[in-house]
Image 1 (cartoon, rainbow, N blue to C red):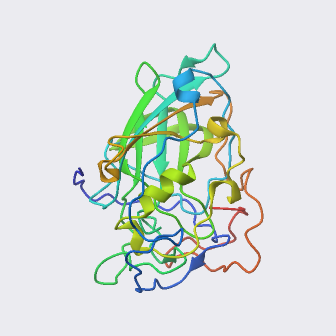
Image 2 (cartoon, rainbow, N blue to C red):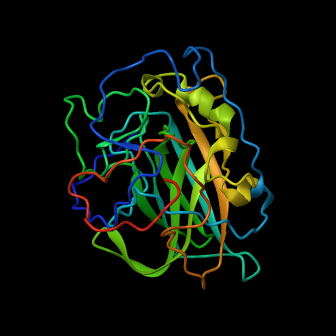
Image 3 (cartoon, rainbow, N blue to C red):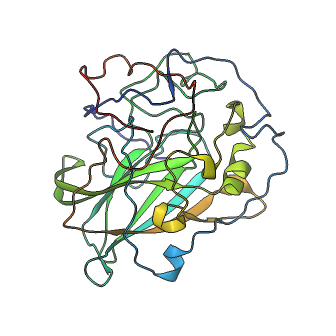
Length: 310
């Protein structure tokens, strides 16, 4: 399902201290067969999320939230962002609409996404412990902080649509399952990435708990044990359904989770607005007693901008 891509140097724009997450050496203890919800990894059945915006055609200005601490500049323009990462396939269809112009599609908008792998690790930040017990990011126990997996751009077609091939994200403490997203306009593709323009929208996409439970039951997800944060308990998700980033999810095969899901959503944006998500809205205070730490080695020095979540 994956394609191999040439290595490309990625410049870190910022590395914020991780609110509520552990930044330390990654443990190598595994818990095969027990998932994040504390149940045996057997017999899970997929369900469809409750979001309906993508299918109804409604045009709603999306709720912007924080960028979080795991952003990197220089993501590649590409459809398949997996880079060999194992997990349940996710075919992501995103439509960008202009809420100021009769919900017309925003042709040429650059949609950028990034998310963690099945065990909760982000490329570029593999020394950040995802919480609970998980295998090391790589088989030999080393880290690869310059990798670019599960990050990428797509340029919207005439209908405002972009498509990504990725995997269902895992989770990390204290967050629910999510995908980060930015919508850029006014720039252009250059040297395999997207340059210039401005960020009109910064947000996150979310998954209903029943779908997440079905995905986290089998391997490789089940090798990450610990306390998963339910959607309604997440510090960023605001409970507003599709307008707050809740994906509509359809299983490819209801009886075979490993076949994957199609996720759809309409992102309503204001092309004249600018929102890079730095220190962004949404979020909240991490759980009391949640561990904190310093950014990965090699990250830029200096005082990070405040953020309430990742």
